[in-house]
Image (cartoon, rainbow over all chains, first blue to last red; front, side, top):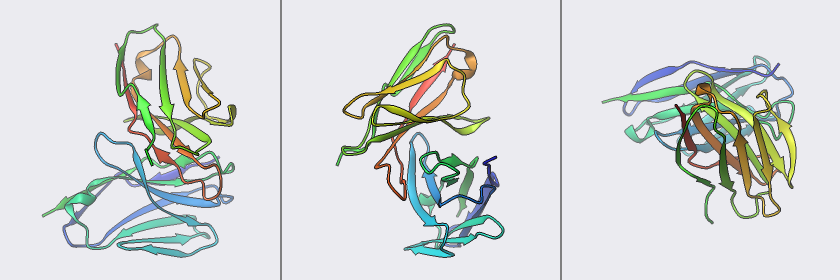
Length: 111
Length: 113
C-alpha cells in the first residue's frame, strides 16, 4: 500500500543547513510534495517535484529525489528561527487527487 | 485572492452528538479534500470532492460523510461523535489539475467530551 515515512525530530543550529528526509513506497507516485505547518496553522505548500526530476531548487530550498530508492529530501539553506515548524513529505499516490502524508518532522533551531 | 476558509475554528461537542464543519475553497478551485490530524495518527485523508461528487475516500467509518455544493463549498459531517474524533480537521482546495497543489485552510479544532 501507500506509505510515507519521516523521522520525527531534527535540531539544527541557526545558519546551518537543514536536511529533512523522507521515504515512500508507491512507485507510481507522480508528484512529491513538501509542506510546512506552523503552530496553530494549516499546511503551507513549500515546493513539489515531478517524479521524472532528480532535483529542484527554489531559493533556499533544494529538493532531491532518488526514485530508485524512493527517497526524497528537503534541504533548507541558512536555516533561520522562522523555519521552526513541522515539515510534511507527501506523495500523490496511485490517485493523483489523493495525497498521502508522512508523519511530519519537527524542525527546531538552536541559537 | 482569498485563501481557504473553515468555520467554525473551534468546536466543543459531547459524545453521541453530531457536528457539521464547513469549508470554502479558493475561488476557481473545484476540488476540496478533507483531512483529520491527530498527534497519534498524523494526517489522514478523509475524502475528496470534485464537482459535487465524491472522487476519493479514505479509511474512515460511515459516521464521517461530506458533500459539496455547486459553488464548490464543502461540508463534512460526523455523526455519533466519539472521544477519538477529537482532532484538527483540515480542508484543502485545488484546481484538480497537475501538479495537484493543495492549499489548506487553518482547520477546525474539534474537541469531544
